[in-house]
Image (cartoon, rainbow, N blue to C red; front, side, top):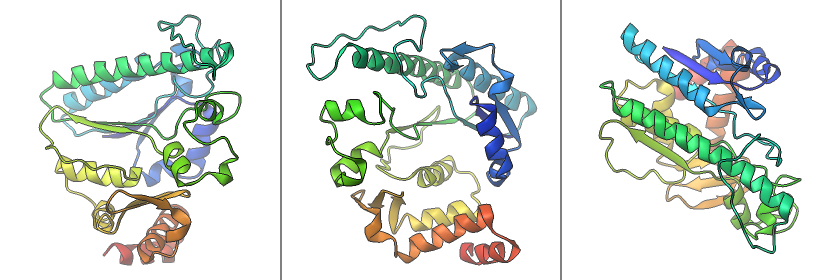
Length: 283
């Protein structure tokens, strides 16, 4: 069973469906926000209800005796983090920092309430999976850092976590901090102790597939082959095989990266001829 949960707006979900995005990922079932509007916390679907649905899908897969891949995107702790996002807060973080005023600290508290709830539900999901006999892997990560303040990086700048200048002037230190998020891989059985370090999310998917012992398709096998040349690339950053960061512009002509970009384009936007070329790349 292959399914996705993304309780975001109907407009954005429709946008992805219109781009033929979910079929390219092999997703057969899409659970959207319009089906769960009675379970809000703040303006978005609560992480508690989101976790309820994941557990429900796991139990259904066990009953049907089929493997399950579930890609879930939670929304409760999404931007914005205005002080009135939640009716009540379970946390009240105090600070005597001269760098944050009352409104900014209230926005941090709003964000931390979401972190608190996400952590609680991740623990609840892990406890549930721990109680099951079915070998299961949980992968937990974020797609970007929070937008804290009246503009994207305001509070990060005021706390001197990154420099206080326009984004196009950021140095490698700033870019490495602002374009990186932590990830967690946990299982209810022994996966070993290998440290994968910093890597792109598509490389993370390949690593998890390899660790799970499943029969991988040619695409994941191809990605694992690329891991011998680099760990990832984005518009901003390139990660070499040692986990060191470099500006991506310095590596745009890397033949392995050019081949990977051609592969992605053919997969999502290509015609039959391009897909035939894609098959040759994967051989």
